[in-house]
Figure 1 (cartoon, rainbow, N blue to C red):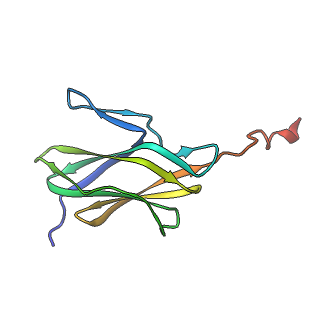
Figure 2 (figure 1 turned 60 degrees about the horizontal axis):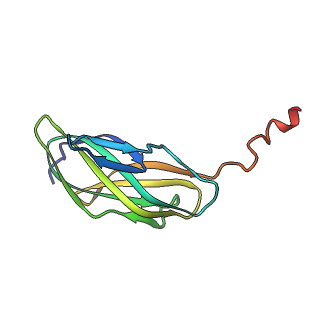
Figure 3 (figure 1 turned 120 degrees about the vertical axis):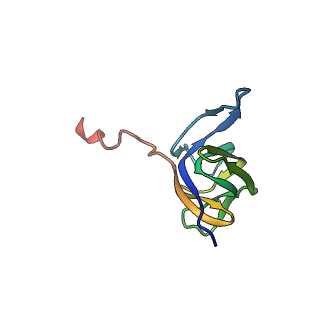
Length: 139
């Protein structure tokens, strides 16, 4: 098997992605964690943007796993992308009605040509009901 000429520059989580007339991407609601008042939570739209450098043609898939990696929350259809010599490619995956059943560090897996290429952590948190609990004893 030949070695991949591929580098994952960054991964961005967001609420939605739009391709403008200029072919630029507009990302709405960029986040690094999901903070909700209660669980489970269903996100109507959830986007993942990956930025690739290198060269060649590849098949990408994205999977979201529960914190214990025992259950799949969502999985994308395989998507083909090509990186021209000296260029880059942005791959956009949008999930619809994604439910996160519990809090924890969800695992976002990025597969290239059906093999695991990278894992990113997406924390899902429920904040404390009383955010001032720690300073109440001061007064």
